[in-house]
Length: 302
Image (cartoon, rainbow, N blue to C red; front, top):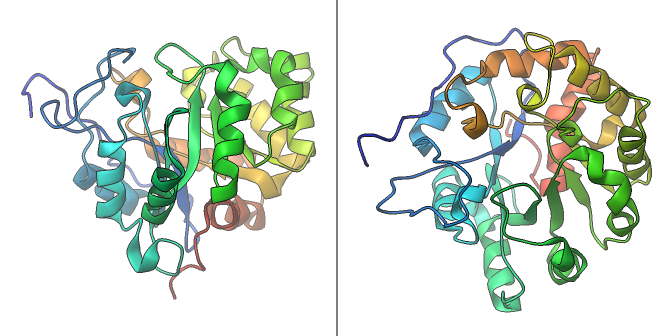
């Protein structure tokens, strides 16, 4: 590894929230040595070194048992780092779809991908395709419906990160998608909005349509109020949980590539659920039950 690449921080504090069995971190990234995993020309900024052994320590600290690894924009369509970490964390254990698998992945593939490759990736533990509609993304809006139709027969969902203020413009197309849709980071409204804002109402309509899931994650990327409660983003998270707790997910977004100079405390991010989801039953649904349904995890280990 190049010595000038910073190593991702691992939170040392323990959360107040006691995770239920099978708790899942639904969005994080791995970044390996540059000589093994070169950055794509479209990489928006140099990421930290974030290896599996560091993330295992974070899982232990937080009490998380399962993980969904998301292909970072830094690697474009080269999924090798993500897939190598997936194999190390048990994505294909017992065939990848049975009891015991501890990891899943969301990958980036373009229109040149073959059905044979999609089948191979599914067997390894891939369950979704990522559309990153911000600087560094490689899949354009024009390929959205084509790729959604390509991956739907394999049981994949479409995961999207965008400036949530653009949702009204694309709402009709997103409603037409043949498989589940997952929206990152509580909608990621780059200019914070109130719950009555038209763009947030668009997100609520997608959720209420029954086929859209939302990751309650990375409030530090958009909040103006900041920690510990990120109240402006928290108001949106609470409204989403009230509307459809059965389709909410939690994620750490470790190693926080956009905040690498001052990363947030992962324990604080997990403890936000104590404020956003007021009862233990809702938190168990968000942390364990919903991810198990969407990503195909089996029941928690006894």
